[in-house]
Image (cartoon, rainbow, N blue to C red; front, side, top):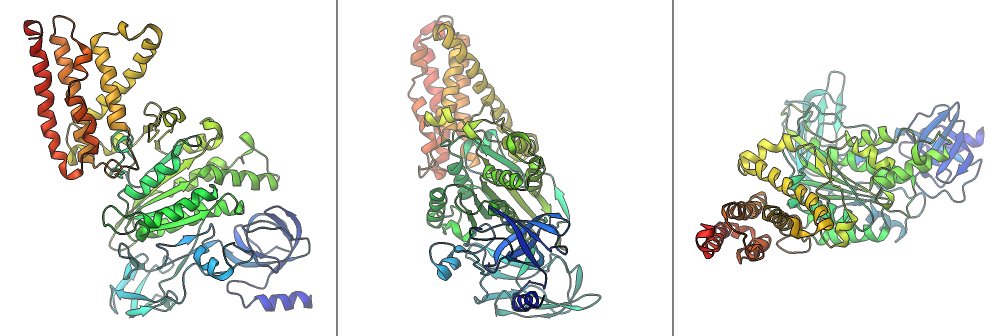
Length: 612
């Protein structure tokens, strides 16, 4: 006992550690079983062995605790100590998160590199937020003001794009500002003192929050405002609402990562949180190298000025994958509570589910479908349900939104596998990537026949009021033409195109224009990479106007028209090139409308009385 007491005294100086010490009895990969853990609670953080590896309690049986360790467990053996902290896995929230690269448990990768070099060694302990850096704190309240949880008491200009709003911590329900400071301060310096009913509490710019517990809000509102992405197939046909959920399932090489990069760059979200969960190291390296070079299209500043990156690659400890998604969404909720619109990209939730499956197997739990744990569906639901457009917990009732977009990587593109099905039961938008489209170099390779959005009715009024009343009718007509094309192509494959009527051939021609000129979008093209809603509306208007004018001509014609000639009038090329037109020149599309009427009108006159 005296040896145990000496160890306790030594480690009690470490912040957050109490005096409880257990002993390892079993090691199985990332799973460690320890005894003498009667005082431990579910999801408590622990330190495993004298190397102080970070772990989390995931199962309790009597005085034995099963611990998932977030670091490599090689070399551990029975008899080594386990130190409890009595605290759940939590993240540090405060100035300094924007522009940071974290691992799955919020250790800053640049800080780890400075401390131990290019490779993460075991037992590294480093604060998520810099304790020495000073921030210019500007108070927004004064002494004697009444405040409550979530109220903004001051601001810090964290980057040129993000004003960090320092809030009253959720644990302080209400009180009176007893003292408020201004000027330079670190995240741990006391910036205010708030008097509550029982005591005077110190407030710093640093908050801690358990990752598995959603941050509080006052009220969740309906998803009636679309998140504009600048990607035509998404905004026009399958929009996602602010505060909504979407998934991007697809096989290898179909463009999941590039699509998420486009969303991160162009979506009208003020904060972007990008989680690389279990993806290949070279993919995450591309993200880490590319994001600092990308420019924010609204401000011209580097995109990293409003981005938080979390990297947990496939060669990192498998248990940390689960932690990474919770770490990311807790950070995103914190910025949502400030009143920002936040977009969270998780790439990919399939790797997270695989981590759940591995830990479940080592815990000897009853397996569900394909070996995944029986609680896979509830875990996926818990994650996506933390999205939403909310009225924040504060006296000013500001609004914030958190939109979740998760990539799913089904083996072989099989959407019937458990992770895809569990995700589809929860999310409201399905952007299904198609390998056959990717092989034909049609990007984004989103299959318009199998994708869907359940927000269409919710956001219909927004599009009608801001863009035009015809928007929704045009979208429905365009989708109808694409669906008819799929049916007609079956006939063409069987009996040939000559079996189709002139009107059916026009449908094929218009659908081809929709596919190649509207749905196809080049992410690498300086202009085509982004299309405003106004440009999308006018592009679709041109395509459908040609369809209507040509259709009217076909109906009036008394003899067969030269369809090949009708389908190759010069204005068709102008319609195709409209996507390369800069945003400032989109009014030029009005001239193209005139050309459509003129050229089809002159074409009708060429046949004399027969076409009149």
